[in-house]
Image (cartoon, rainbow over all chains, first blue to last red):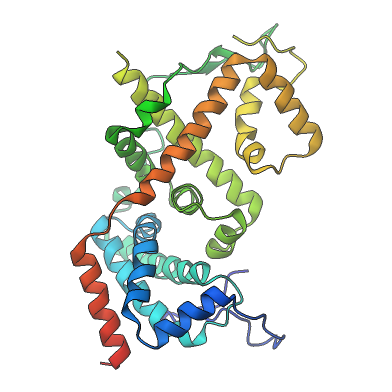
Length: 232
Length: 85
């Protein structure tokens, strides 16, 4: 369930109306929160190092440029620090942090949408479709309906270590619709568990998996395109 | 080229199940159909291999370094927050 949030960005991780006994914060989160409250800089730097890039990627889904996304993340960090006293540990710390971030990004995106021509924010879903790499047989094919007409071309995985391949992955993720981008960032780049991603983004497991699958499918396709371009 | 029987899962359907397959959340019957299809179909086996390779390659984006100015900026903000200024 998405947590209640005020426009100022303060964030409750509990429902005050319910008054149910709150679960204990995990010992790791408790330690981090205590050190942050005490102003411990290495702790702060460590969570920045760990999360900042993912936060920018997630924010980019809602705003028009990397520069604006950086600003949003900066704003989210302030919201996180200010909200720290209210964090009760009902969900993992980083899931709570990302909920604040998503909230900041959505508000900023909404403000931008009023001033930026909408076409500038659209994600071009048709990109990368110029040349069909793989095709399936038609559903009414007499022998093999829905089976490969032209199967995937083989690639060798050592190519994927190439900086160019990573650049292609990054570029494709940046083109994804916001919700797909958020899920693939947290699941596949950051390696979060499914349940934690659902908590952070306020979506169901099933929905999360559909979004992740679409995103992975697009990225694989982009890589397949790249592999066929650079094939010797 | 597929050699699976037409009544089995079509390749087109199989590729849509791979995230659930890798997350281990398919029901047992569907999972078995996927596994049987993979045994018979080199196209889908290659697709699954590429799908997995894509997921591991994507993970490498996490290793990018954060720039010093960004860190400095945030550290400044942290110091201000702590001193309440």
